[in-house]
Image (cartoon, rainbow, N blue to C red; front, side):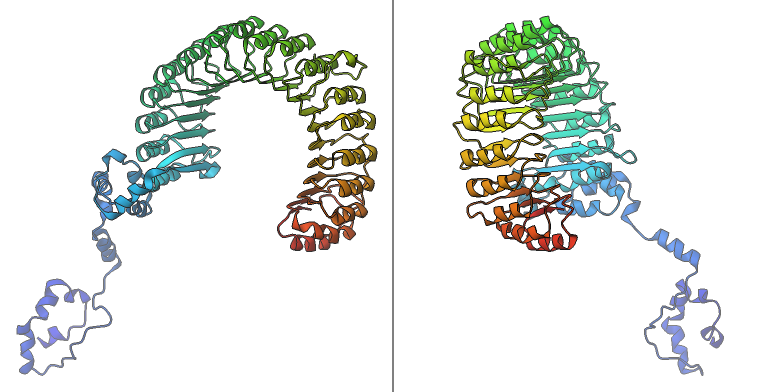
Length: 636
């Protein structure tokens, strides 16, 4: 027995049952009749149990863990969690738990009565919006959103902007949203080639409140997904499909049958979409459809004829690149008398839109107020004049790269719309030439308030002088990029304008001098709020001195690349009534460190200051100015 008690060999002897027997009272009772030394019985600070490495591994494997439960058991546990906070905490444990939680549908959740649940119900009046871009657009993030947003009113708007080619969003991520966010109302997916019909079908099955669907560059989504949307999402009001090569007529026809509330439709670059799909959409939504945009589609005059007949509720219409639509199609559409509510019409690069077509719209659309033509090469002066004579209430007219429009057409249009046209914009119209016209035959416009003529190289001082006489009620004028405009032409506008100019843009008018600017400041200083003289290299300190004295309402001034010096800045700073908010001195090579104290004095009102490419300014002084004008956004 002493040998047994004093045994100091293998520690295995002290494990298990033998250790228990050794501590038994019958053995310890021998101490009274044996000469054996017993140390005091105290709790050991170091565990007497020593395990081998293999035993430690075995014990770790044998430790009880919830991870050993199959997914079915964990699913049952998770769906009984009392609130969103508990679900979010569990989702942080592992990816497995996150994906399991995100797969639970709302109707599968067992409601547990608690104060926390009632509080979440109170907070569920509103809904959240989330946007995932680039590398952040992953299935894991969508799963986390699905789990975490349930208690905050639910996810109502989800925007996914792709560009994650490694771990992008797939059908798994959309499935998580579909099961965890039944209140989703807006779904916008751009440039996500990794999703297909399965994910969008799950959205259709789980998100019956969907109102807006925007799909762009999703090549694996087909008509099958749109059929599912049509069968389950009857509240859909807005549909946008762009560059989805597998979506065609069948999907659009299903949408037409199942979504009677559509009021906005945009379809772009979908080669399988033709007359059948567009005609069915338009005719089925004739009482609700108000906005329609069609771009680069293989449709013909059939679609336009249907649209002209059934588009009774359409107010906004945009056509771009409809190369297969002939002149007859536009003519029939305009004369069908169905577009009575059309207010805004935009046409870009449509060869069938000719003089005959524009005249038909002038007669057949009595409420058309805004017309914008881009790259309509077959619209000439004849069509423009006919349109303005027949149009009942045109208010805004924009012509861009319409090279058959000349000076005669522009001036006649202004004269014909003398009591209704408020805004006219001409951009890159190369057919306009600066020729002498018989202005006395024209009627001055009493309604035109805004005139923009940009990058039309043939438009010069002669034409502008006629415009000045023809448009005495102008408030805003933009002549940017007109190198042919001189003081003579612009002074005609300044001197004939009766209403008081508010916004003037002369950027790039290299022949404008101090004579024009000082006259502008003197005659319109009480109304002028924005003035852009960028690139007017003949404008000097005299102009700014005149503005400092006369332009008390001026808020924005751009004199970039003008011939001004420190004296001009000092003049602005000393003006008592001037409260400039935005000032650009970019490229003014004569502005030096002497101007900085004056700029600092203007700091109470300045919120934007551009000092880029001012080579005479030192970096140290600019740093001091940045510290002084801490409220102002300074570019240097």
